[in-house]
Length: 264
Ligand SMILES: [Zn+2]
Ligand SMILES: [Zn+2]
Image (cartoon, rainbow, N blue to C red; front, top):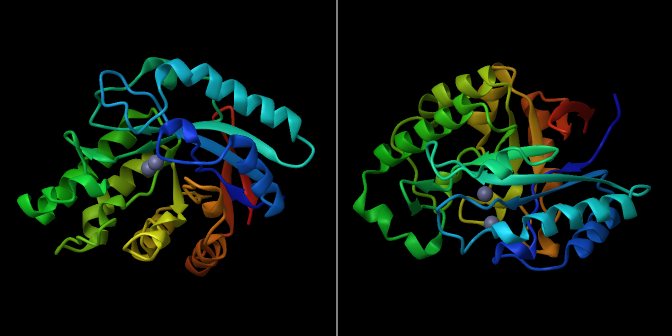
């Protein structure tokens, strides 16, 4: 099996909250000896807020720009085309994204109802809700996302810890049903290093969830969730070391939504 350095979660300026040109991202990835680099822009949604995502009108431009870069740098790096799609219990999904000619789709829960719980603007909402209940609702949404069968990768699996509002219940217990459904749907969990840049100061998901994922034989991949050039590949060593410590020796990349195994 080939060994590869993989980063499948990267944004572009087209989502309105990231900077740097796509080509600069690719050049930085090459300079870090990343072998497989995937763009996964926040996808357009149907009848939902569009302030933090690619606009529907820019969808072709995004896809074509990445395919051009893929061709231009094919001798140096394997560039993949993907989307990070918001899962909000079955609603707001845009068919043109679900059917787009991508290598993979990341399914992510960033909203409960319409509350963007990872957005600092709406942090006040945590005071109004019951902490265990929102964690339960969060994992229920993840379970339903896995059950939908529409996505390949689970994005930042325990994102709800973003501001360190943690549940009183055990995380393993809270996440167990979602993990079983992820296993059943043959999805891959990303180890996302962006949590190191935020309050948790660790990757998503936490080590105890990853241990459970390993026991259930759920495959993994890696993502930096870069919204800036300087975030590409950041904490890659930390997340790969952790994966190895837990027992993982393989990670997954995708081509046309088919899994390909690598060592890391
Ligand atoms: Zn983002
Ligand atoms: Zn995300």
